[in-house]
Length: 305
Image (cartoon, rainbow, N blue to C red; front, side, top):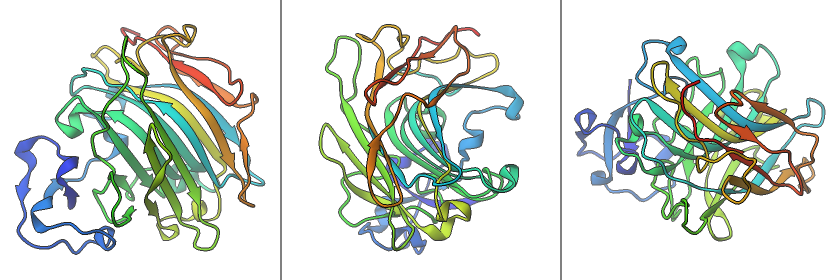
């Protein structure tokens, strides 16, 4: 399937074909792009993000905290995330992200999800730079949703200084100043749309929104919010670094996510508590510290599992 995307979302150059006509996809209705800003590109699913034959050939790693509330639910989250860069190959992926889920119903077929964060993903972008990325689905990535602007869905606001897929710069690194992005995703009460706000070392401003019409259960509320690090590699490839590449037990070096606030139905925001569940996939490669004062550390060097 072919979809319109922005040049900043470029994958392997051999996959790109110039376009001469104005786009008609609805995700561009609020934007001012010329015809030369648009290219064709095959849609790539975040569920199949690496060059592997099947899902069993990909290894998934997480170092995250999760908050669940099936009754009252959640209506957004705001967090400051250190952002990093890595020299990865096309069989590796490393990210810091927020996951917003609604687990009601048959989750294998109806899981509603929004993912927002930063990612180093050479297989998609044909580089090892750090990019802002978004993902959405309403059926657990079976047939709906996409990454960034690959399909009609996420709506950019006019004048946004960044788009999903754009490079984030500068980034943090060992012996370099920490660079922090602020991400806020919140549900607008009247429309039900999920709005994305973004800032780098600054107050976040609107980027765009996921319309409520994209979703089923998530159009009402989220029942789980997760935050932390994520990495992938194909089975015969070394797992990549996560965060800055240091374990959480070294707070002077490790990646941090801080000022984490959960947003409630009435619009109130409260700091995330230390009762969040922790999920670390492989403790030999990665770790996550307990939450304290709405902050935690995470990451690890990766390597052979």
